[in-house]
Length: 211
Image (cartoon, rainbow, N blue to C red):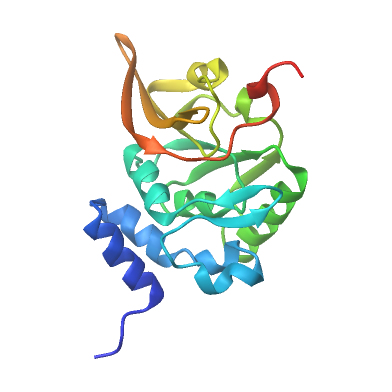
């Protein structure tokens, strides 16, 4: 029997750590993670850890990507917004799960490179925009799910406002101590749930307040 591939070993590790959604596991197995990192760290792409991608940003640990994606409870028909495109890896994972995906990146160079990599990897239908994700993407709203991959100290009100009925917002919140939080828009209002401690780069732009 052939040895398992790096993707298969990563999938087994995710299962060991509690990821159960078969669609999420498949997405992380088939998305070519090594294509979304700089060449110098590509040999480590399939390890379960965050990696630097330049501009003081990182590509998230695969377990965190899987956990957040699973927590969003995505359906194929969902309209989804990602805030913080980074390298484009999380967007590629989401594109394996939903047909309608928009993503916003505040650093123009990252937005441009992510769009090119996504297109080259076959995810050309992902809409990539350079802008401040604190404000979401009101022209594309409402969204069934919003995932945020940078940590504001407080939840951006525009993101909550852009949730459709039943919509889920999954994001890290905090400064030194960060918590992954899920908001769900119900008939009775917003329901907040704390999921786990995390460590993300801080959200920049309007999230930081007046300079």
